[in-house]
Length: 417
Image: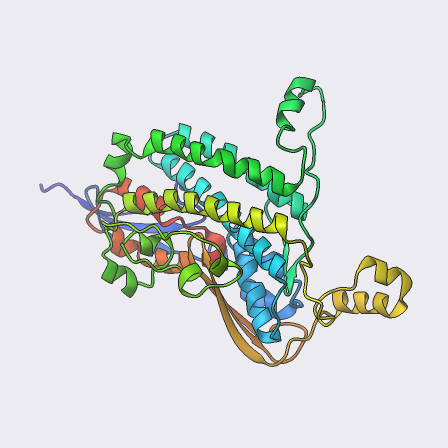
């Protein structure tokens, strides 16, 4: 009797390497994948529909939860779309702050991706290294917004507040003695910019550590080289963006091709791959962290030298200052009206996109002149990339499916929306 080799299995939704509630139905010939059918919707939260019932400002925190690894980049696209409809431009200092935090977010995203991707294919140490640096940058998130992840720091017209002049300090406790606390606070004695200055000075050597662990590691290369090859032509046809597109050799980056915020004022390079495989996509992300470090350094230098407002002076968008509210009843009423009824955005439609760490993240908004969106549509890069999983996995082994999911860097909050 011939051995039965063709069968169907479920990959997830509880699979530890699925990076979310992904269910893949795999049709196999032995261990070789013949077809992969992604089933999504297990995390559906109706973000686009909820936005129709919230004021323009109340939907900002929803953006953080779409891709909970790239929070401020999501906020950026949403705020830019509203600013297009309003016809306003944030102050230059706010644009530099947004640029700096977009790149902090890019590093946060790539650190998690590289660490967990290595974990998926069996390299335990890497994730311990990358999460060490993530903690430093999450502290910067917390310093400006009070939240470690879901910041809600960007606002239509600018940012919530200027950068703090003092970093939070660790205190002695039964878990931390005086010498430990002193070491932890060594980089926290000054402002947030001083803290970030210290980080960008240290970070290139830390990336070298990651490279030493992974880049020429023979097991890592055996698991990634030649896996999930996508040509430049196919990458364009499939709608890829971000490292998925640049890994295939296409030098497309919205920060260069359609500059926004302060990206036309800073100097950086676009890394591209040559082979279009999982290894090239890893190398692109690794080099992007170095380029992000360059951009953050330039933003720090500019922000030190150029104080100024961080929010538009348009009273229809910006809340009054606390000082004004204390002395003027009209300003107090305006404050309550703005945070209860919300701003009214002129009729029209607008699309704004940012170079999110995972690719092109876009927000399409339609306004009917009310205090909330008439319609919102999210263009999520992960949704497009996941749609190619069938094509990318065919002919590969089951173990390679894990590599490819890690290579795509998908997060299900933005896919299911």
